[in-house]
Amino acid sequence: MLSARQIDDYRDTGWLVVENVLDKEMLSRMRQVIAEFVAGAAKVTKHDHVYDLEPGHRPEAPRVRRIKTPHINHPLFWEIAKLPKLVDMLEQLLGPSGVRLHGSKINLKAPQFGSPVEWHQDWAFYPHTNDDVLAVGVMLDDMLPENGPLMVMSGSHTGPTYDHHQDGYFSGAMDPTKLDFDLSQAEALVAPAGSMSFHHVRLVHGSAQNTSQKSRQLLLYEYAAADAWPLMGVSDLTNFNERLVSGQPNIVPRMVDVPIRMPLPPSPHQGSIYENQTAAKNRYFKIREFA
Image 1: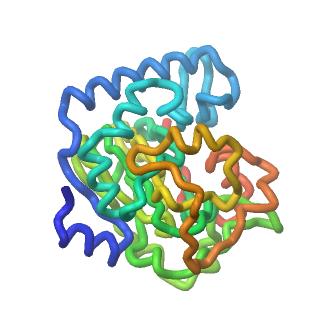
Image 2: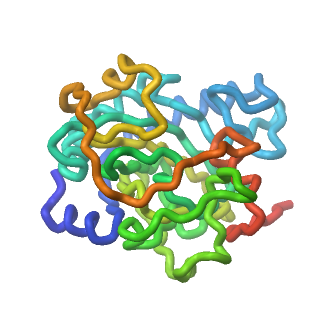
């Protein structure tokens, strides 16, 4: 369970890191499954329902930047999404109505390659009827300043919802030249493997390229309070309810007045955040070429 101080810190800054949530045995199981996924990418040549591929991917040298919806594609990741100690912490942060899994992904950054993710707010992608929504980052490797850890702007979750559009279309990235704060003040969420980070859905965050010799594997779960309903709609109510990890199904959304911009019209490069952000003209994170 989280302490009162930890909960207060999350409310104040918009993020929290809890160390040593997973043991070495669980980390080993997860890494083995991910290695099997990456090896399986040798059979694909373009993005599909499982893989988002790095530029330069080749069957003989698989490069994967994202494994999509792992909770659907392997039972281990649904097991982890429902871990009682994780659900306990989520209930403390998201309120009494219960907790629903909104989605999941695994972002991979290979040594001296892994793609950056430009500054954004998750809220821009999936606004809900209230903002008791957050993402959990399960750190499968040590998160170090040089291997592209999650970087956050503390307190930004209480501010506006920034424009994530380019030329009238949703791009999933904020223009760093049009912001009213200093991105150089961002904090890196560094912690040992087995730790978990929690960040509010409206928190401004991003991550740089991995310039180190060490991998950076981050399993991300998105959770919402059970009474937070996605404004883009619910296409399958049965599945929506099956993703509850605590609480009971209800059809009474809780409405809160929070700033919203809809992710419409969709990106001409609609897909993962990496594909959406290819439309961004002004980028903050640079890509270094390694020999």
